[in-house]
Image (cartoon, rainbow, N blue to C red; front, side, top):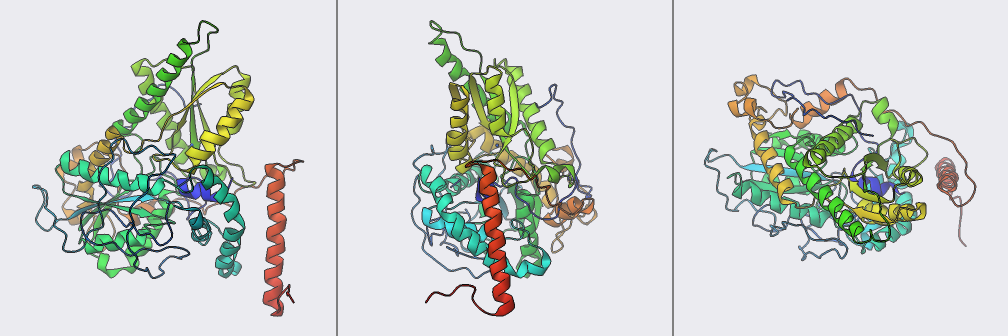
Length: 554
């Protein structure tokens, strides 16, 4: 139950100041009517050392790349781009596009017929990243825990965060490496995200007629966000659509990446002329809902076919559809107003309605939350507890849906496929199927392309050099913006974050549940960790106060 799991998938980690449900003050951000739902809703993995594969765009030389430990803003070192490797336990994207390398300023680029010759459109995909080899794990963990959004220390000892990050990374690396070793030695998340970017770039050209360039920005591993921004500057992009690869918005996922972008935009004067807009979430889009329903229906039908072959001996019940979403601390939703839980429940309603409309036969559905970490109370019900409960209710077949993930990584390949399947088998559930992540599903990619096109009118509403939305400066919203069914609110990075933070309380420290369980349990692991951290803190304070080493080796 390591926190790096949360970082790679992105959900559920403490980040940034929180707030109530996202709403943008800009006149451009007009909320469309939400589809009505009839039912109520009852979630690791590669960078090889010193391997750059920077933001996707066509042509040119590799961009700056970093391996090993790096804090934000650190200089980037150039390295050569290696060939990609296929992850052994991950099926390739279903619509895999040819990889495209970062572009240089001299890259050729035709403009769409509807655009002026000076307009250059870019799309920035945001994701969390993950270590590509076992050797990358410790450095990845350092980058993760050196981020104040991940590990919050009181201000008086904030200076010790790099030291603490080094210690945590060193001590946790062996355990984390075991998890990555179980799924082939590294995370496929980068490879999948780059394939998604290439497929999206192709769909924009072929399906939408827009010659846009698509870039990948990872939060804690290559290609870092700073690398993608450098590629965007070299390509002289003028109109940028920021698209987080998280269907639902949460301050702990999209919010963290957006805060880094906000910082970069404010500090880099070369970005003064870059107009941009953000698509905060897109779980309501019909293409996404239909693509998820397609995958679920396929697994339900397959399980039914398998069961029909054995009905001469017994008659199994219809499968139960089990949605497993990444969790967040409960206090973030209840006290800080994070919209993640509400949007997740709406996602389930939309998908279930689509399954019912198609006449798919299944024995009910459940939404549960996985990947909780530490002694805090997270969104419930928990995935493992829910599996055991369903087994006691007589459910013998599960179709498991990793609902908050669009690519395979450690939480699908190891946590769901290995850990939770073992829980199910021990509880007596004999039939198990797991719905694959969307990856490069053609319907899904085409829908992202449509979302990008629908967002472009909002880019025009962001005046150059301010980062703020202003309808007046653009002469009002274009007609295409008024008529579009794009998911909104949309707005600049600054506008989204300021609006989201405006009405929110400070991110609460999650309430800690003190509970002791005897034996080799999560409780014992937790208390052992607490004792170790208290001892470490005492040693550090002693050495600072006395100027002497606590332990000396002769």
